[in-house]
Image 1 (tube, one colour):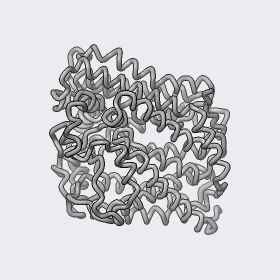
Image 2: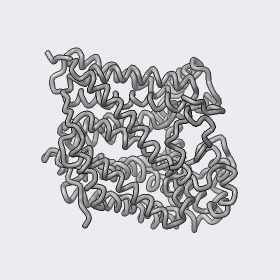
Image 3: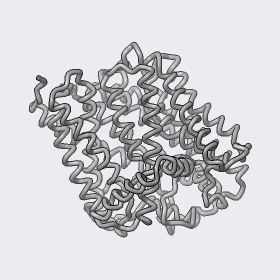
Image 4: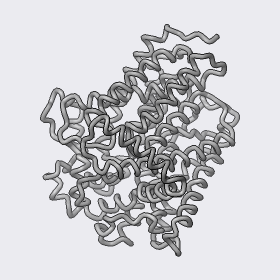
Amino acid sequence: MLELPKPSYLPSSGRQSGFLTMTMILIGIGVASLIVILLASGLVSNPIQETYMVPWIGLVLVVILAPIIYLSFKGQFDLFNPIVFAAWSYFLPSFVLGSLFLATHLSWPFFIHLIPDLEYYLPLSLVYVALGFAGLTLGFFLPPGRQFGVYLAKKLPVWDWQPSELLLPGVILLGIGLFLSLISLALGVIGYQQVDAIEEYNGLVYFLSLVGNFASFILWFALFKTKKWNAYYWIVLGLLLIMVPIRVSVAGNRGSLLQLLIGVSMAYWFSGRRVKLQHGLIFGCLMSVALIIGMAYGTTFRNLKGSESRADFFDYFATSQRTIDKMADEGIAKNLETAGYAIGERFDTTSSLAVVVANHENLEGYEEGYHLSNNVVNSLLTAFIPRFIWNDKPMVSDARAYSQLYFDFGENSFAITLMGDLLRNFGPFGVPIGMILLGILLRIFYAALVEGQVVTAWRAGVFFMLMNSISYEGFFDSVLPSIVRFGIVAILSVLVIKFFSGWRVRIV
């Protein structure tokens, strides 16, 4: 029998009554943004060009919204339930809004000719998306995930630290994360740049730099958890706000600002604060603003930098400064236009998935030469061996090699999606089966850290890291290694907090 989550940490008022409305608001804002972009662009006279896509987009929309609506009617809606989170943070924008962008030709990528029969392969790709999300939902609601998660929850330590105990270790971790991020930037392993060869310790430095992400979440959690602030809390708030432009500059991409906002929102949610309808409106508006600014910044930054070639540390930040200056000079209208084109291009994931759906059988024989053949199995055998131990470890699931083989353009990383990678490796039946397994894993995390219990700072922080470790746009073989690495970083961060937790900053 399927078991529904019972997030008892949610207050009875506000959250259980208003979040179907919040979901509709977010969807409504997205649709309204689409309409505005279409009208403002002047690119289309008849909005829907590829009319045959409409019923299949509707199918995906129904499959995605079904568990959200059901949970809402049951009074068990949780904005950061892994299924709900996956729906609004990835599947809805990528395969509903993105498919609408494609159907209206607001997005019409240069590689569209690689799909031999659009009227067959675009709908088929949307069917695989529907099967994938349905499998993810089914796996999440199956009993084994919840049962094992509840078992783990009983074994985990309580460690319910007060907000004042989180400030010092949080700031220490934030500083460590910033330092390692700058080192990673200098090494060329993060940001809009690419290294020719992976050095032994590059990956280790990058993953350890993620303690900064954990620290930011914990500090926001502490701020939201505290009703009466003293000078220390205002100093922490200032540090967190200063970190925003630094992290956006280091990332140099179009989604970093939005990701930061999602982390702050998750901290607010799990802190136990009351959430009302106006908060949903504010959240939706901030999401839209962060999306537009991030898209405009990331696109302008990439245009000015020109390529992903390795950049000097100071030149990289000089490019960031030139990006800000150029955006200021161009004004609101030009930045909105830049963001509009970028949103149309970035949200359309259906077309890149369709390239895989249409060509994976014909290209199967060539994948061995690109180190892509049987990548899911091969990754499980090698991914957990650090490169500083096995320096000659073969590359598995090289995004550039995949782009070169499937798109004949290795200078960019095209989305493959978990569904596309499962299809390549195991055929059509592998899509729902693989996503079911992932759904079970997500339920284990949710039940062990969040569901049915008081959510403490460290539980919320670990859950935040685990959710951010999963990229639905990438290779399926990267899911488990990323979860393990992000989880290790989170655990190390928790141990640092445990060590410093007695050094309490008093509230006066």
